[in-house]
Image 1 (spheres, rainbow, N blue to C red):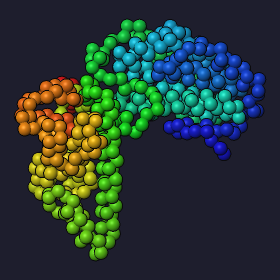
Image 2: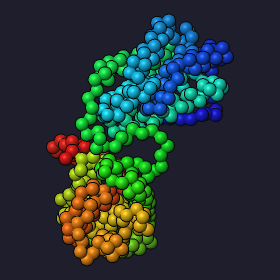
Image 3: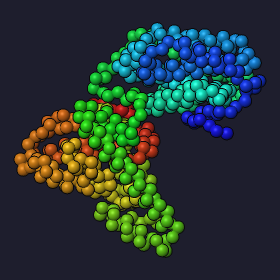
Image 4: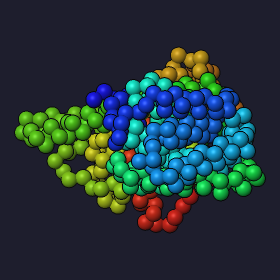
Length: 463
């Protein structure tokens, strides 16, 4: 069966029979007239686009079901919801971009609004995908665009606890089959989300503006983006005053670092599996290779059982907006006593008995975080192998030495202290914090679970 697209499990089919008969051409034309008669404005804001998708989907949903599949009461409920959503949008200036502008200055309220509209959109997508399909190109295009805007806003809400609790679990109707019970659940869900949106009107009329809005970049920018833009966003969130070209350059370097570390981690994992499967033929050579690449930290014996390294490197996201340094977790007691643990960067089992050995002599040699922050420099896109080479580059190629006078930092715009040590420490801390963004995202859950077992802390620390 040919399909158009699949978004988060929402599948649209070009051929799907209705309970009674195929969709009549007159019904399709009637729905198209309704959709075309809606207020037309440049609703390019994320809330405007999402609300438009919900209204169009709801209008189509009503046209695709007759009294057999939806009761008279259900039809009345859906029509009232459609009218309510239209009035809500007009009352808050959604179509003119007014509401999106207001919500850009109230991040929490923006997330709350999207966390209602997004699951409403998902409910409508479920209803359309399970109960209706058509060969009509306009209808299929509308379904496809609705699924796209749903996927975009779902991605934007991933870090919002209240949103994910709703959107990830989805509505009760998402698992229902074709029939009266499934339709009834969809109708109830649509009414519930519409009521929630109306209840939010008071807060939208008097929004609480974020006091630090001007110091933080907006992350709700829905557009086609390159892979490195995600890393650039993280850097910009931590250093909002940095030059855009520098952020772009560092974002590309961070993305390349992430890819390199991922490949190295997979390669070492495959080598570990091979060594366990062929202990006689491959074990000795693999051990020797690990010793050579292990930065002088001792042997990496694949056959030795590693200790669980519970304290994993925390995510770059957890402190990207607070100005605080990203802390590398301390070694476990077993590791300090000489036991092996798995490096989160390269995936090797190594030994490091002190935190300095762990970070300076291995982790940062894996990450290679030191790059030139002069965007016109030929070395701006290539990381230096170690801190010393990076220091020599600044001293000789950019004339930092021999005086090493204080200079304005291109990232935080603070003037550094004079002296080689002070300047290098200032810059290297920034580079190392950015470098930690290349670590795998799955270490976050481990770090969070460890933090939960002790004293609770704000996951987004503010200075």
